[in-house]
Length: 263
Image (cartoon, rainbow, N blue to C red; front, side, top):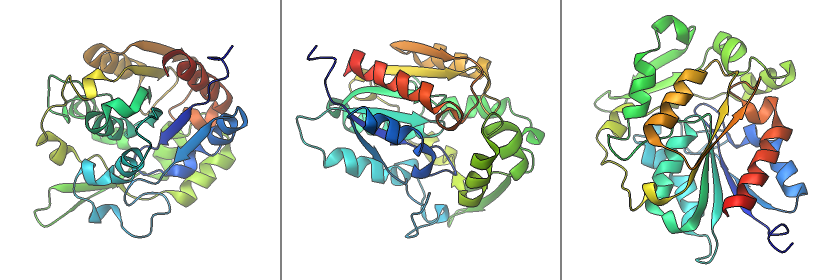
């Protein structure tokens, strides 16, 4: 009974071009269950007006707000770290730096790297199989002094037909109003050292697969899991890419079950 009543600290990480706001349906559900929940805007994202994505050169810089949260947490506390989509790369960076502060990392239809290849490998593999037309007019721009950075801003068509396809129309409108340019930092990630077994590799990973996702198809998610490995895989039927918005109750329930099992 004591374990069932254990309180957890969830740290929720958004995907590219999104912000802390995208957890607005999940956060209160977890808090209502008695748990602590932290959300943050990664650098140049959400309502962070101190920077734009073109002021951010690497995924490590981009993930700095998450790193600061874990770095300032009590030594005795372990968090349940949850990342959506590109937020999985920030989870990996945080896991490499603070493996002892994370009880379990949850990858919600997210990029989940391995320890055998450069950090960019999983992203490059997925992108290599995406024809240009699949981006549906998404805007890309080079930036930085050497022009190796690439920002992207999802097109309304991509948002409607892929990312938010199974979400209420009101949430699509909200997302369109809050959308900001993001980046996948592929060039910078290709130059980083591989994630280590001692750091990132030592943190238990659970992957939540969204089988109705259009932005990252089921076969792509299965390849990521096979390539990187996971302690557990949970499959959600009829769930789009923005699972926390289209199926918040189910996502919250899965997170609570994962926390009780691994934390």
